[in-house]
Image (tube, rainbow, N blue to C red; front, side):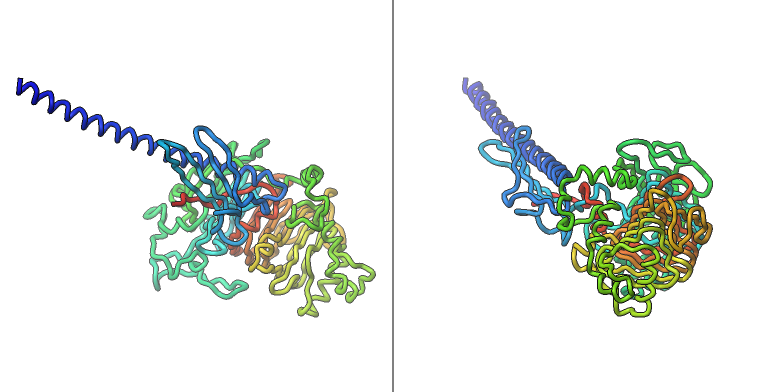
Length: 538
């Protein structure tokens, strides 16, 4: 009996201990389950905040009440804030979204919090995007898609298209930063920009030439690629954009080969694009922005937020809207009077009138234009011009084509110390619905330069040796062509539409483009919201 009682006591003690351990494990499991649920509830709150901000009449200005918005969801609830309450820390001009998920368990509240940095006013984030083909050509071409401010959310600039991204020449350089063995053995390009001369690697935040192997066979995915953006194979949310490859999304091609390249390693190694550095290739489904003037007008017709046009704190890329802004812009009235355009007080010019203004500004560089300027027709810069001074506020909108002839230097600077200056578009080339040129510039079917035809379709052409220094968004209705020896120094972003397959949306041939990507430039579209980064908060 003593042995039996002792055995029973031991078994009972062990059973009680096991039950206690099981109860503790169940409690821990319940807490862990609640932690996981609260995290995903917070993610749901972040998604809801994005949806609400995107649906606002002005996503860039949307905010929530200081106490946030609380919504019951599933077995818990989430609260989200947009630029309110605990939502801060993303930087000037960016939207800060914070969401907190909460679950009640065991008489306790388990919570998790996440934060996202986003750009209001654009549903996508890409430094250079073309609806049609984006084409890089020429052994001496240099393209840098660098961040405007190193270390800010968003990182390096991505490159995308709805149709095709084509590298016609294997020696074309895209983000080819100081290729070589590093140190004194590296080959470094020096770039003279509006704010000084920089080594190419400095654009991406490297304090000295990075030491890596540029040979794609030895290192098809070099470590430096982490600072760059992606190639985006895009597909529109509605409709289909056809391409030469026959793929449902944009394809990446080399030379005349129509085989779609699947990843960056194959691009560099198999296809010998040894001077092209991008993080990776990803697929996206994106809305097609600013399809044509009719789409703009339809959007404007449904937008009741524009009842008092002059009070809108953003610019919608609608030709009628920008022309109205220019018509109401009287800041250049004195300049108009000086060049004998009286009694003209607005800032809508015919090409001939704008030539008069440009000739005067060339002789009086201390003066400049202000605000939104609209040219009714195709315009060509035959000589150099600085439209807005060192830190101006000019948006140049063109109802035709815009051409920079050989050796012309055109500058459009903004005040980049303010979010408003960074959001302001730089050049918007709409073309004309009649597709015909006016004034002394080339007319329908004529050649501008370097084999580029113009006819009022909304094309931006940089002839050989020309230079464009611009802040903000460059938007074209029918693409941009950059000729041999031309140079682009831009802080902002590019979005190029296409009116057909005859012209690429973006074409560079033996030229240099330094595009320091500022996501805020994309907020000029005034629709949607795009997330740059997110993190879980303690």
